[in-house]
Length: 448
Ligand code: GUN
Ligand code: FE
Image (cartoon, rainbow, N blue to C red; front, side, top):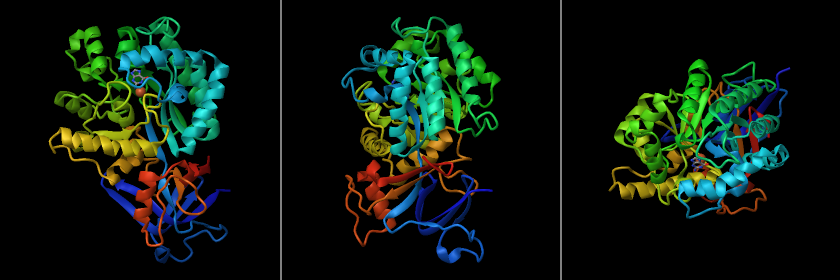
C-alpha cells in the first residue's frame, strides 16, 4: 500500500535564482515521499484528482511550506566548538582550537553521544540535507553516517583525509592508511539499509574529503583522484581559496601551480561536476573560468568568511552566478558560529552588500529571492541533487519545512499582522524567525 499525504495551504519555493513561486492556496500530494501532484490553487484541482480516503493536512493562515534547507558545507565534529577562536587566522585557528577539539573523536563513545545532538540540532534548524566533513577518524565517521540514516537526514558524509601538517595526535600516519580507511567508510555507508540499491539517490552518501592541500601529501591527493576517476557517483569536497594565509602556505607547498588552486586540485583529478569547493573567497578570473568549465560547485560560507579565518573575506558570489557557476550556502559549523541556515542566509545578504560597495557597484547585492534560492535549489545543484530536491516540482522528493508564524509561537520573529501577505510573512520569517517557527521538518515525506 503506498502511503499518501496531502498538504493544503501556503507554499513558497524557488523556480530559479530570481523567481519565487508564492502560492496562497496550493495542494501538494506526496506518495511514498515523492511529490505526485502540485495544484496551484483549490479552484484548479480537477474533479476526482485527490485521493478520497486521505484527510488533507490543512495549514492555517500564517503557516506555509518551504523546501528544506541544504547545507553544502558543515564540519560535524566542530558543532560543539562553534564560535570559539574568534580573531585567529585560519591556520592558527586550526592548530590551537580545531585540531585539539577534533582529536576527541578518536573516542567512538564521545562521537556517538555528540553526533546525536549535532544531527538533532541541524534537523531542528530545518537542514534536511547536510554535506558533512567528519573528523579523520573512520569509526566516528561511520557513526555519523548511521545517525543521519536513523534520524532520516539526507547527508553526504566524508571521512576527513589529512596525512601531514597536523599534530601527531591527529595526523594520519600515511596516505595508504588514509585511502584504505576512506574506502572502508564508503563501503560502510553504501551498505546502510536502502543506500546500496540506489547509489544515485541514497539518503546517506559518501563524499571524498581531503581537508585541504596543506594537510595532504601529493600521494594522498593522487590516490583520492584515482578513486574519484574510478567511481562516477562519488562526490568530493575540499576547502578552496579560503584565506590569504592558507593560499600563501599552499603556494609554498606546491610552487609548481603558481598560486592556482584550480590547477593544483585539477592536476590530481579532484575537480569535476561533483566537486564541492568551500569558501572560494579569493579567486582570479582564470580560476573562476576553470571551475566553471569543470562544473564544480561553490559552498559559500559567509559567516565563517567574515569571522574565523581571515577576518573579512567576501566571496564574489554575484560573479559566480553571472558565470553560471553553481552556488549553495554552508554553515561551515564551526568556523561559522551558526547551525542555523537562517543566519547564513542573512549573512549572505550582508556579505553581498559589502561586495557591492567593495566592487564599486559592479557586483550587485543579492536579493532575498536569490539568497533563499542559494539555501535550497542552489544547494541542491551544488550537490547534484536538483533532480531530487530543492523545490516542490512533481517527481521530486518531499523535503520540506512547515513554517508556523502565528499559532501560539514564541520566537524572535517580528509579529505578523492581519493584513500581511504570504510574501510578507515569509520575509519576516527569513529575516527574523528562528527554529521555533519551524514546526515540522520532512525528508522524503517522513517527519524527522
Ligand atoms: N581549512 C582546513 N580545515 C578547515 C576547517 O576545519 N575549517 C575551515 N573554515 N577551513 C579549513
Ligand atoms: Fe570548513
